[in-house]
Length: 44
Image 1: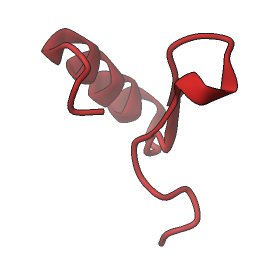
Image 2: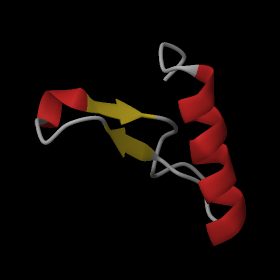
Image 3: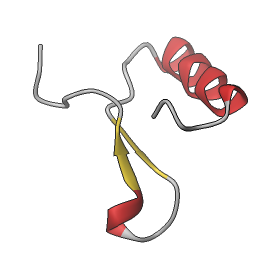
Image 4: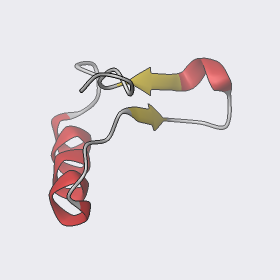
């Protein structure tokens, strides 16, 4: 997550604001190993 460009992080944070929900997982390609865990999706 921290290795993403700052513009990508800003974009994801803006999406969170617009949808009113946190983004837990972010994928950068169709490959499963390219999925980034932004936050634990099962945490409260």
